[in-house]
Image (cartoon, rainbow over all chains, first blue to last red; front, side, top):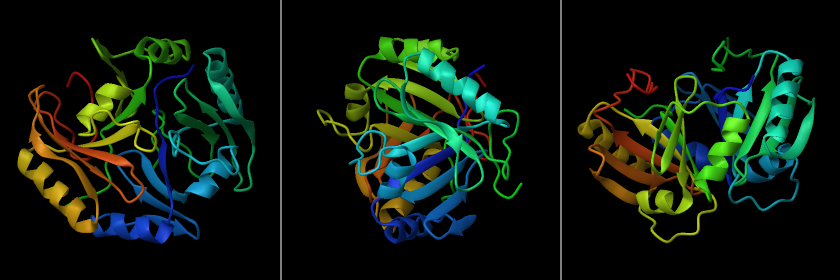
Length: 141
Length: 141
């Protein structure tokens, strides 16, 4: 059953180095940084910086000029079956499918839907970072 | 000192009834609904639906056509002084001020800044819903 949860908030950014410098100057310390993505551990959720082009591609909208939806709200679930189920429930509720859930290069399973205004939700299973029962994710767990 | 925290994620929506119906059809149950805003309790954070026009107005951009930034990531702090401090730190880091922190009609204290890509952060003190030490907010606490 779908319930309100946010595991990751991913901000699409034009210049990763500039954005990272901004958040670091604001006092944030990255918990992980891997090439083209930077993660900050927040209260039970993770905030990520990711290039706009890579984000559009990952959301199943390669080449898109992102406006609304230049941010991903990610819900993580412990299994592929739960991802499929919540994805199907989203479509039944009237969401637009951007990318049906599929195995992804980093070893997980992920799909994307858009709500009526274009706000983008990722539904994911990450075997390396399983969510707590409430959908919270803690990096390095 | 500013640290990564998200207390509220507020989605700007074109039609509140349509959006509420979508999220309810997806299985979410509102925790509170007050006229022109609907709140869902998520894992340690709150997800809100708010009209695009009201959101633009609240962010200090009345009349704006929202694209990037049609969503607010809110950080709540326990005091006005902490809001002022984190706001000043954001500007020092290169954020654009949308609205300097001020007392607001609902009884709290709130300001808005935009990051280098236009992602919007609200910095707020809400005396009715104080955050936990990690910035999480639980409705009705």
